[in-house]
Amino acid sequence: MKKMVARLKKRAVEFWQLLRRTLFSGITLRWLRNVFGAILIASILMVTFFCMFAQNSYYNMVRARLRADAQNLENYYSNYISTESFTSAAQTMVDEFEDTTLMELQISDLSGQVAFSSSGFPLNDMQETPDLTGARLNKADSWIGEHTATGEKIMSYTVPLQDSYGNTQGTLRLLTSLELTDALLLRLYLLAAVIGLSVILLTGFSGVYFIKSIIVPVAQINDIANDIAKGNMTRRIEKYNQDDELGKLCATINAMAKDLGESEKVKNDFISSVSHELRTPLTAIRGWSETMIATQSEEMDATTRRGIEVIYKETERLSKLVEELLDTSRIQNGRFKLMVAPMDVVAEFEDTVFMMMERARLENVIIEYIPEPDSVEILGDKNRLKQVFFNIIDNAVKHSETDGKIETAVTLTETHVCLRIQDHGEGISPQDLPFVKQMFYKGNSQKRGSGIGLGVADEIVRKHGGTLEIESELGVGTTVIISLPLSSQE
Figure 1 (cartoon, rainbow, N blue to C red):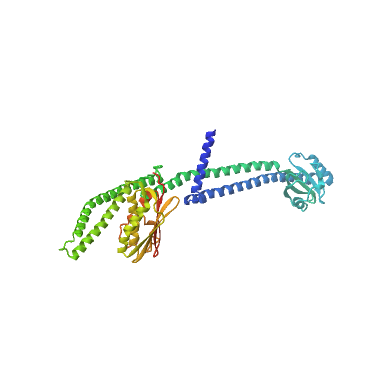
Figure 2 (cartoon, rainbow, N blue to C red):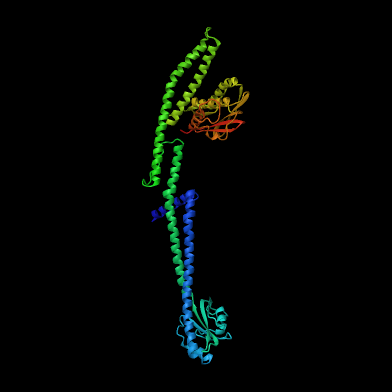
C-alpha cells in the first residue's frame, strides 16, 4: 500500500512538473483552447441544460397530474353537487377526497375565505397566491412556493368552481409537496454532474497522454537538435513509434546527425592533415628567410632584402594560422589537452604585455599596464594561457586606431583573478558580438585574420574553469575580461 501511495505521489509530481513545463507552450495552449476548452464548455452547458430539462419535465408531470385531478373534481362539482349549497357541496368533496397522502384539497368561496381543507390546517392562514387570484377570475393557474403551515416546497393548481349554469361560486385548489420530486431531481443532478466530470477528466487524461506522447518528445527532439546544431554530433534521439510521423522525424534527424558527424570528421581530418603537411615547408621557408636576413649579404639590394622580410613576416603569419588550425582540429576531435601545473599568472601576463609593447609601438599604439597584485599562483597551462593573452592583445593592437591606446590590468577577487584588456578602436557591431567567439567567424571586420583565435582562446579559458567575456560598442572600443579561478578542480 505504501509503495502504491509513493508511486502515485511520484506520478502526481511528474504530472505537475510536466504541466508547469508545457502548459503555456504553443501546441498545448492551442489544445487547451480548441479541444479541452470546447469540451469543458460543452459539458457544462449540457449538464446545465439537462438539469433544467429534468426539472421542467418533472414539474410539468406533477402539474399535469394536479391539473387532471382538479378538472375531474371541478367536473364532479358542476355536474352533480353544484345544486346543493356551497358549504354542503364543499364538505361532500372533502369527505370523498381519497388522495390525501399525495395532495391536499382546499375549497374556498369567492370572498377568499377557504371553507374546507383535507389537511385539517387552519384555512384562513393560507397566503394569497397568483393561482387563487386567477381562479377567482375564471382562469385556472398553478403556483410553486412554500407552504405557510409546514414550510415545505409545494406546487398548487387552482380552478374555478362553477355550477351547471357556468356561474363561479368559489375555487378548488390542489396542493402537493415537491420534496420527493426535488430529492429525485437532486440524484439526477448528481448523476449528470458525475457524467460531465467524467467526460472532462477523460478528456484531461487523454490530453495528458497527448502531451506525453507528442509535446514531451517534441521538446526532447528540439533540445537534442539544438545540441546537434551547436556541433555535438554524437547526440541521438530515442526513436518512438517508427510507424508514425514522430518516429520518422527522429530517424531523419539521427541520420542527419550521423551524416553531419561524418562530414565534420572528414573536415577535421583534412584540416589536421593539411596543417601538418604545411608545417614542414613553412618551417623551412621561415628558417631560410631568417638566415638570409641575418647574413645581409653586400650583394643583396634593398628591394631583395625587403622582399625577404615580407616572406619572413608572411611565413610567421601562416605558421600562426597553421597552429590555430591544429588547435581547432584538436578541440573538435576532443584531443585538446592542457599541461596543468602551478604557475604565476601575473608574471606570464606581464611577459606577454611587455613583449607586445614593441609590436604595438611599430603600429603607433601605446600599451599601458596597471598591475594590482605582484603575483597570483593558479593551476594552469602557462603556454596555453600566454597564447590566449597574446591573441587578445594582438587583436587589440590590430583593431586600434593610429596613436591609440590599450589599457591592460590585473585585479583580484576572493575567488578569481581577472585580466582586463581594453582598446579604444573600431569596436564590434551588436550583430557580430554574440558570434565573435565562434570558430572561423569574422563578421564585417576588414582586418586580416582567420577568425579562429578567439574560439581557441575561449576554449582554453573554459578548460581552465574560467570565462572570457567580451564587451564592445561600435566606434568606442572593446573590453575583454579573462576570469580564472584561484583554485581549479581536476
